[in-house]
Length: 274
Image 1 (cartoon, one colour):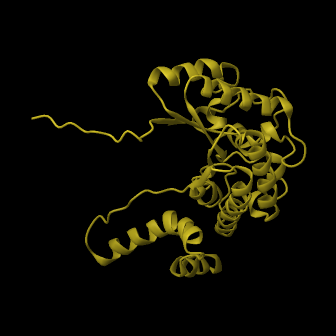
Image 2: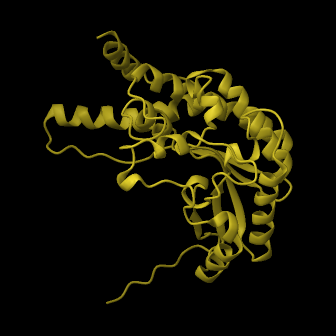
Image 3: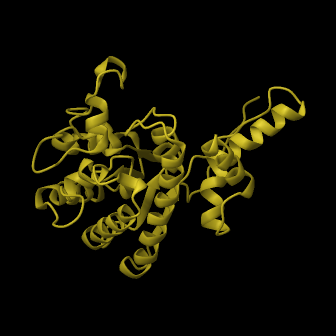
């Protein structure tokens, strides 16, 4: 007996990438280093010493890549913008060559019947901003807002679907407490500050988006994994609850409820005071 699954006609099949993972051209046309350039080039941080200097070379081969997407039957393509490619100083003037690359990519997608979707931040903060405190510094939320507004104005006429922050748990705790991703810190207070500022930057960007991109859609992409207790004893159940609260509720409650989970605030306080 076979079962036929009927997908709704409104379903869009998509593919997604991140700028540092595919673009390459790390030192071309005015792009400045991001925290991932610095992190990946530090010995011992990445297996085999791999880095994104060339990656998939999509900066030069984007037309070929769009052709592959079309062959796959993709309806929607989510890609991220390299902040340091379009605003090399982190704030201030736009880089015309960087902006032109994304405009050309968008046009190529539309020409091939693929809807573009932009992610503004996929973990690659300009290194110049990291040296000023990075996301630990509240002023980075203003820099992100400036960058977001510039991108809305540049591409909002053709791109209607946007993501502000990709996986903020990764950009905060995995990167600043566990030290596994750039910038590789192991400081809980730093991670908590980064998590708050990422959400604040998201809110500032969304507020401006509503006026700048009429009929557009915008959101963020929180980590939404799931945990099941290994046994049914109370300790295992509570461990799962804490894990879910850390990855999920810490990033969703502020957006949907306007507050952080009290229990997790208490846990963080105990750890940082030890």
